[in-house]
Image (cartoon, one colour):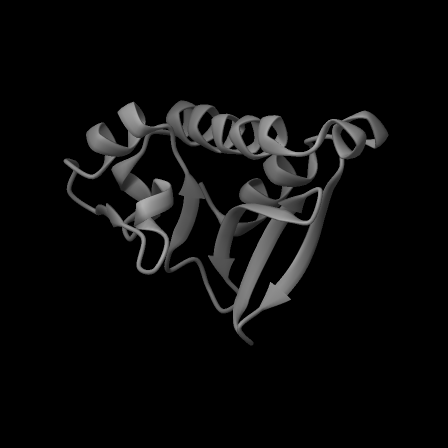
Length: 112
């Protein structure tokens, strides 16, 4: 995974928008809720939401840790992009989008 393929993947989901938060983080959102975050400068880290089961499995891997400030909501921080295979990147980012989308109010989901 690289920055352009991450952007292509995230922007391919229905209703995705981008925002810059905290001055240096590029956030991918659906319904104004984040589902993936990466740094603006280079591809040093990527964070995304995981299911409770996936969270436990992911943080056992080298190069993946609980995301600071948001681990209690099952967010992981991928510190080493090679910690996930290309197909896993697609699977986990897709799941993150779905987890966030499914929690949106029905009115917002219907408008997307």
